[in-house]
Length: 422
RNA sequence: GGUGAGGUGGCUGAGUGGUCGAAAGCAGCGCUUUGCUAAAGCGCCGUACCCCAAAAGGGUACCGAGGGUUCGAAUCCCUCCCUCACCGCCA
Image (cartoon, rainbow, N blue to C red):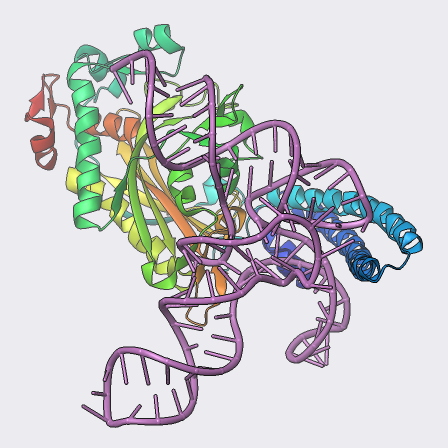
């Protein structure tokens, strides 16, 4: 959520920053300004009435104590009360309107974010490793089926297409990767491990920007107001919602493994082969809550922490920065980490590391007390460290052997308990 | 699921219809006293929003959330959320 004061004071600046995303947010800015002006006008009138009522009511109390008649004042206050009722409804309505409008306006891209239209304009920042030299590589579906690492047909039998059932060594590999990544981030990168609820309240989904805009992509429980978290970002970032943290306890760094649930509405037919895009997948997520002046540096280190997983596993990857047109709704700046998939002959996104600055914090009222004793909004960041099915796919494709077996990278062997799958 | 108790400022905790944004204590900040520490005394010490070009200043709201009763609600009524205790059930 953007600061209404910023919009009020520098509407042209806000519009021009938003314009770099494409879309027609300028109209939303004009609308929110209109509502804001009406709201303040009504609020001022309401406050004046409240002040009058307060004063007169006290007068009644005083007169009654003196035994004086108060009928006339009472009648007057009753009138004011009616007016207050009307004004109150107006203010409540305008307040809600303004809030809804603000919730629908995306964040301003970072001042030096690469300007571009879509994913084709995303610059490559760096790359690590090299494409493995494989002749006629099999893709993960062929490998996984032959080695019985997962069962797509039976996954679909249980829950529908887009649900995987990992089996045998595949299930074990999945678990090994989770354990490996959690240990890395908690022991070497200084993150605190969290194991949060997978079901979260609506407010949390609003806090981290999944709602209200992307409700059709979320799984919700209809009778209760609970949603299946599409990422651990939701429960973990909201952990301190509505709190005022001490500056000294920042940054907070959390690592959490959770399954992630996504409807993937509108992406039918895209990347649907195998386990690349599914409705439920495992992920280790990194979340940071930082001081505003430190979020940029923390963003870089968070991305580096996620990259470290691929380096230790010896997987070729590249880091791209999202251009303004491709940037997520709430993000100021995002790096995507893409691992090389020999089977697809393409890079697969396994992590998206974003700095939200105070956009989420404002929605969830997450603040800290600065040295001057003033309450300010924290900055929040998150990134996958990493997302599993794609990492799984890239790994078995990269380490496939000519005889159809799969080698396990050395660092992972203690977790997996074997040097190969055959 | 049942029964009971309860949610007040950073914390503890008083307040059951008017002068209560809210006693008192603790913590915090400033000053005085002091060889240092400690202690004592005095003062300050919530948040959000609105008016004002801004500062100064003024105002409104907030006692878990929402609604109601009333001239007036932290205080009375209703609904919801949450916490605690005990009972039942259960991995």
